[in-house]
Every structure is written in structure tokens, then in C-alpha cells.
Image (tube, rainbow, N blue to C red; front, side, top):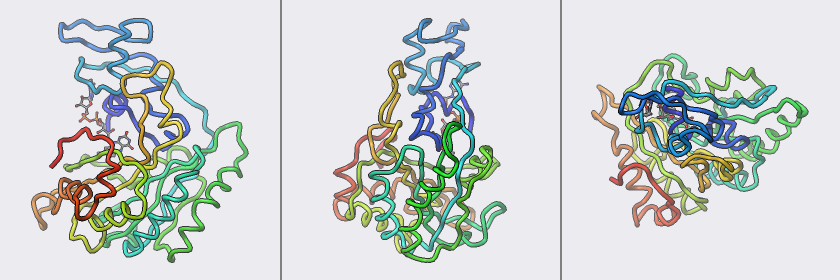
Amino acid sequence: MGAVGYLVRGGMSFYGRQVGLAANLVRSISVVLADGKLVRATANEHADLFWALRGGDGGFGVVTQIEVSLFPMAQVITGGIFWSAEYAEPILDRWQQWCRTAPERASTSMRLLNLPPLPGIPDQIAGRPVIGLDGAVSVPQESDPASGLRILDQMLPPLRAVAEPLLDTWAPKRLAELLLTHLDPPQPLIYQIDHFLLGDLGSDGIEALVAAAGPTSGSNLLVVALRQLGGAFATGSANGGVVDHLDAAYAHLALGVPSPVAAPWPRPGTAGCRRNVRSEAAGEAVRRRFLCSRASAA
Ligand SMILES: Cc1cc2nc3c(=O)[nH]c(=O)nc-3n(C[C@H](O)[C@H](O)[C@H](O)COP(=O)(O)OP(=O)(O)OC[C@H]3O[C@@H](n4cnc5c(N)ncnc54)[C@H](O)[C@@H]3O)c2cc1C
């Protein structure tokens, strides 16, 4: 994905619970306006435009340059741990309990995956429904490297106790390796996506989510994810833009890819997942906790 599209829409990274939305780190944006004029927007020049471009998407002109602040990071502990999707409910339940008090240095995603056997997808999780926890535990420069491993030691054992994982790759790694954690394909992909923000799911919300997207749901979505928010995602920034924080516990995402051998578009599809998760019958608890949406309802 492009850096500009990522930044003007807010930008959630795996350091986000520690440093907040990426748009909060933007110092200046150069943009060509509709009248052809090139302006540089900062907190002091074209301040309204600077505010709108940080989270308000790119409809204000063509961005040609963005200057961002950096933050020091010594190392990252990253990877993924995966189980057969039949364990989705207890795994989600234990992860949710951990999320409620998790340290800000940890940013994780719990994902129901149905990935085809393609290059880059590990054999243990390809071609079968699985549930997996991936993400990052940051090791800032001034911190003790062992402190990251201690966070991992609180996060993983309760999950490992549910069932034997199919694959576990969590380990200290080079910073650049974080880009591979999500198993995103390096080539461009045609996909259909839906997302919205959720509060705490509770056990009834987890049940509804698994009914909508779990192994017996009939869903052929490739990815149904809950991304852990809170921490610095929730606090915003003193001079932030129009979107400088996310007031929710999780960002939900559902992604499908059209397939020549299956239905032309996912069935029940991302809209179906939304409908199921929000329906009175299957997901009243999730619907109640539904906070906001940028996409139109199905
Ligand atoms: C596989 C995958 C993983 C993702 N993971 C994450 C993630 O971890 N965190 C996260 O925050 N998001 C994630 N996203 C979402 C992604 O950040 C957004 O879709 C982002 O908007 C993509 O930007 P783009 O420039 O690549 O896409 P585009 O579709 O080209 O652009 C998206 C929008 O950005 C604006 N834009 C782009 N370039 C310019 C420009 N030069 N000037 C003005 N406006 C511009 C336009 O409004 C455009 O409509 C992911 C998406 C995918 C497909």
C-alpha cells in the first residue's frame, strides 16, 4: 500500500498502541490544490488543510511530499501463532481477557484465516481454516531487551494452553521483518473489504463473530480480523488532525478475494459478515457495541 494513502487515512501500525496513529507523526504535507497551486501545509501554514489531510483522506489535492517524525526502536518481537479454527472461541476469549490490560508496547491482531496454498503461506496454515495471533512487541532503544520477552511470556501461555498450535513464529526479529508478519502478498491484489470499530465483545460477541465467520459458518472470506486498539491509539495528539485517535477496543476487518473456482465474490462476503455480525439473531451483543463505520451498511 502507498505511504500517502496510509497517512492521510490515519495509519495504524504495529507500533500504534505505543505511538498512536501514524498521521499524528506527520510534520508537513505538500499538496497541489485544485487551482494548480502547490502549498506546504504545517501546523503554522495552511493549518486548516494540515488538520483535514491528517485523517480526512486525500480529497483536498494531490499530495506530493510528506515529512514525518521518526521514533527510535531497537528491536521488535514479532511473528504469528496459529491454531485450527475449531478453537476460535476459547482463543478469542483468552486474547480478549489479555487485551483488557495489555501493555502499550504490544499491538496484536487476532485473525480467522482461510488462505490458499500460495508461495509465502506456510504449509501448516494453508488451505484450511485457522485462527492466528500476530503483531508486535516493541523494544524501544532505552529499554531492556528482555522486557519484550516478558510481555510475550504473559501473552502466549494462556493461549498455548487451549490447544497445540499448528505454527508459532513469535521471536525477536530485525525491524524490517515486521513487514512480513501479516503474510500480505507482495503483489497487488483485487479484494473486497469492509471494516468498522467495535467495543469489548464479551462472550456473546465472540460467539456471534465465530457464527458469522468461523469454520462452520460457510463464509469464504480470506481474512476476518480484530485488531487490538487502546493504548496510544485512544489518546490522540495535542495538535492532531481530524482523525487523531480511535475510540474503540478493536478494529474489525473482513477481506475477500474473487476466485475463478468459487463464487465471483466472497459468499456470504464482507457485507454478509457485517450483516451476520450485526443481525439481531446472531449478533445483538456485537451490534450493541457497534461504534461507527466508514463504509455503507449492507
Ligand atoms: C493488504 C492490506 C493491508 C493493510 N494494512 C493496513 C494496516 O496495517 N494499517 C492501516 O492503517 N491500513 C492498512 N491497510 C489500508 C491502507 O492503509 C489504506 O487502504 C490506504 O488508504 C491505502 O493507500 P494507497 O495509497 O495504497 O491506496 P489508494 O487506493 O491508491 O489510495 C487510497 C486513498 O488515499 C488517497 N491518496 C493516495 N495517494 C494520494 C496522493 N498522492 N494524494 C492525495 N490523496 C492520495 C486517496 O484519497 C485515495 O482514495 C491495508 C490495506 C491492505 C489492502
